[in-house]
Length: 240
Image (cartoon, rainbow, N blue to C red):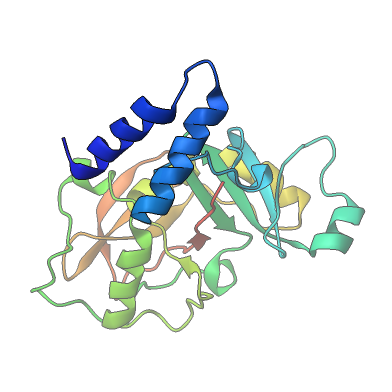
């Protein structure tokens, strides 16, 4: 038993009466004063703003310029009051379990097919993924895009600070929700995602990057980054 524990026991034994809670409080106060070491109190739960911490249900969301996200209702579309308060819709959000993503309203380069980079990458880069099962598990488009920028991203791909080119796993997530995303895109004046080949930021090698056909979900690992041309749709993080 430590010295502090012995002191506590002595105080309780001499002054405390279990039938009189105030005597126990007195002992605690006396111990604090004698040791200058307050008795630890059980931590109280910390409550945060419920609107910030409440988990949103799965579905499609309209993400406004203000950052506010509201569930998309196909029957209501976009209410003018909401636009007046929070600005226009900037992204279409998807939430499915723990997975979330925000999809840009339009393809890059005005919807034209473009190369991904201006040249091929370095053979020494350790982030290449050449196996399908590993590639579809890649959800790190943000890191991938940073590497593409180092190689030399096509100048027609103009991303804002928070945007990136989706990894193959993220693009598959878009494919699975494409019908609902397109409904929301059409409602807010965005460009529906076509069922054509799109670049992903998952690189297979110094020369190739993975592609996904948004009409069938077919993946292809032979997109030559600096010479083949396909669509690009940017995404961003969506914290739901």
